[in-house]
Length: 129
Image (tube, rainbow, N blue to C red; front, top):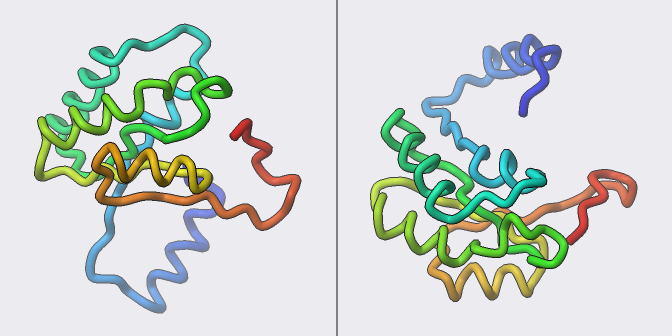
């Protein structure tokens, strides 16, 4: 999420170099659910995604292909992605892949777009992947 204190600086950069389009990608089905302590079942995730699509979101991170032992909320990643692609063919569903194993699983599930984490420092975002 963009910190509000950075918004004025971003506005200045965009004023110097305007862009013709901006794509907003919602991350709540992935980022918002991955740290929940209570298991969120697949139908509930798909209902959240359906509501976001109905609200007009056309790009969202539906899931991530991570180690399900370390991030149990994402154990159903393939099922979620496949349902999303089948139910909402006009929506982009990039998925997070932290490593080659995640990439292979995402591609096998039908992913058309992937996002790979790139850390600039070993202390940044110590994630359990």
